Image 1 (tube, rainbow, N blue to C red):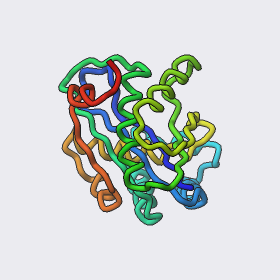
Image 2 (image 1 turned 90 degrees about the vertical axis):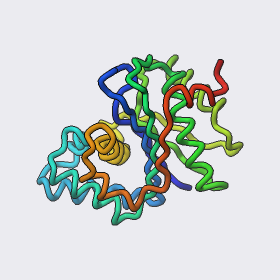
Image 3 (image 1 turned 45 degrees about the vertical axis):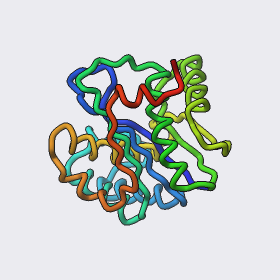
Image 4 (image 1 turned 180 degrees about the horizontal axis):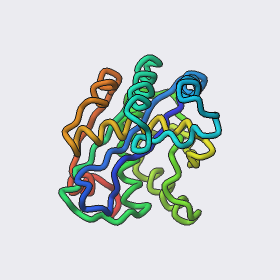
Length: 208
C-alpha cells in the first residue's frame, strides 16, 4: 500500500495566479512522514497540536528548508502537475478541479501500477454534494481499473497532508516568481513534472 498526499498551490479563479500546481507526495511508511513533523516540532519548540499550521506560505524560510530537506531524506516520490491558466479566471468547481486531480492521479498510477494506492486529499470542497460530484469526476477520468481509496481530510486534523502543500508551494514559487531556492531542494525527488495549459487539459477530458 502506498499513501499519496495531494494538495494544490495557487487558485483557479484568481487571474493574478497564472499557474496552479497540483502535487502528490508518495509515502510508503506513514511513520517517516510523522518523523518530519516531529523534528520540526522539536526544532521550533511547538506542540504537535500546532503542526497543522505548517503551510508553505505561513512557514519561515528556515522551516521551509528544514521541512523540504526532510522530504528528500525520506526519499518520498513527488509528482507535479503544473497548469498554465493563460491568465484565465476559472470556476473552482468539482468538475474543473476534478479533471486536474484526475490527470495527476493517472500519472501516479502509471508509475506505481499495479500497486494499490490510498489517495489522501486536502479537503477542497466542504459540501457533501460537491465532494460526491468531485469523486464521480475522478472515477470517470481515472484510467486505472484498480479500485483505489480516496479520502478527503482536513489538514487541521490530518496534518500529514501538509507534506503536499509544502512541496506544491515550492514548485509554484519557481513558476510564479522564478525563485528556485526551495524547488532545488526537492527537484531530485520529483518523478513527474508535467506542464499543461488549461485549454489542452479541457480537450483531454471525457466531460462535455
